[in-house]
Amino acid sequence: TDPDFWEEDVGSNCAVTRRKTKTSPKPPKPERPVRLLLVDPDPQLTDLIQNSLGEQKTFALHHVTTLAEARKHLGRAATDVAVIREKLPDGSGFDLAGELSQGDKPVRAIMLSDQPSLDMAIAAIRAGASDLIVNPLDLNEINQRVHSVFQKSRKDRKQDAQLRRLRRTCRQLNNART
Image 1 (cartoon, rainbow, N blue to C red):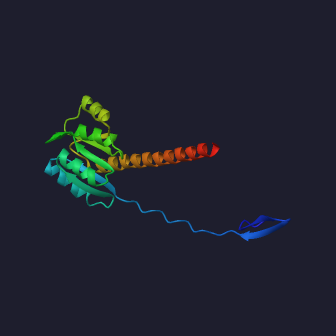
Image 2 (cartoon, helix red, strand yellow):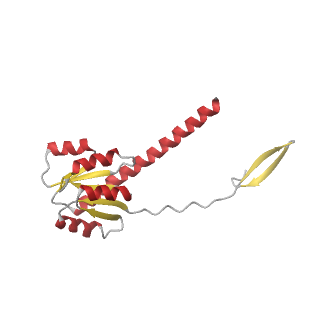
C-alpha cells in the first residue's frame, strides 16, 4: 500500500481511499535573549559586565544597585536569571536569592562574591542560589554560567508545565469515571 493513502471503512461493506494531507513542519521558534538582572553597586564591575554581556544578542541586561531597586524591577518585569552581589547597600543578596527561589515564578540566582568561603557558599545554596561566581570575573565564565543556569531554569519550567498538564488530564479522567 502507498504510505500517502489510507483506507477508511464507511459501512455497508464499502471502503473509501483518502489521501493523507501533508503538513509542513513549523519553523523553530527563535531563541529569545536571557533576561538578566544584575544587582551590584560596584560601577566598574557593572560597566565591565554590561559592556561584555550587554552587547551580546543573547542577553537582555538590566542593572540595579540595591535590593529595593531589584524588588521593584522584579515586580514589573520578567527575569530569567539574577546575578546578585553578596553584600548590597541596603541588605544581603542572600535575602533576595531566597525570595527569588520561593516566588510564584522562581528566578534562578547566581551569587557574586569578592571573598568566598565554604560557609558563604553553603549559605548561598541554602538561600536558593544556583551558582556562585568569584570576583575578579572571567567574562567567558560568567557567560557560560548564566547560560547554564538559564537552560536549567527552562528545563524546570517545561517539566512543571508537563506536570500541570498531566494533573489536569488525570482530574478530567477521574471526573469522567464518576
